[in-house]
Amino acid sequence: MKNFHIGGVPEHFNLPWYLTLRDKSYTKKGINLRWKDYYGGTGAMAKALREKEIDMAVILTEGIIRDICNGNDCSVVQIFVQSPLVWGIHVAKNSEFQTVEELKGKTAAISRFGSGSHLMAYVNAENLGWDAEKDLDFEVIANLEGALKGLPEGNGDYFMWEKFTTKPYVDHGPFRRVGECPTPWPCFVIAVRNDVLENDLDSVKTILDIINETTADFKNIPSIDRMIANRYNQELEDVREWLSITEWSQENLNASQVQRIQETLLHLELIDSIVPPEKILFTF
Image (cartoon, rainbow, N blue to C red):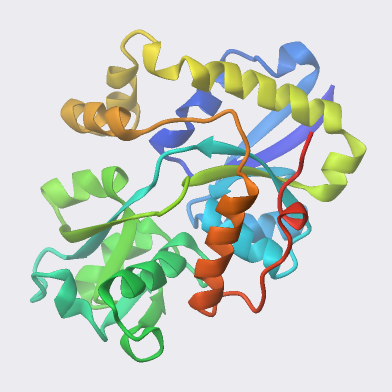
């Protein structure tokens, strides 16, 4: 039995992994795949990949590409979710801010530097024509739980996180959503450490084959909407809306997508230079 460790956020996007693990799909193929939830998101997973705590990660596209450009020795082997991630822009329920425009120059609460919440604050600033150097400030709050506690206490003025994950906290407090910011590219990819690809490519292929078979038919699983609603404390109508706009993928990024993401990161001064796509993408 071969041991593999994979990390991901504990959100509804990753339910296909739970289903395959529950059904012991990997064990049947001689692979002991162990899942670890990373509540700190992209930055925490990128660190875990660097430190070889995990072999693979289901991670935000822009976050892992930035980290690879900055020296993380891993590769993107596949898109996991093709559709954009819709980031909600949240303030505390009792906040004085009513619009996204009012947040110019205010402090964004982020899970950590290099995280999705950090990078998307720059994308949002770019969309609104803000000066990233003058109009952005940050306060680290660790994760969603940190934001739920910290934002009402004045630790940061706004917080960006996936819209449907935070919907219960918008419906019942302590958040109020003032805007949205979708990613301009596929939102989640699967990244694997390069030494793992060199030493056990067959097992990586097997893992991808299993998860791809599940995601290809995921929306057709009977009562999948109710399962998601119950497991992730979501309203059924919200889950159905989310399913209608979410598409999984069994393909990898292409060179033009990698170029576009890097150009955005370079423009926002989040990387120092653009690297060739083959330094980022692994081709089977």
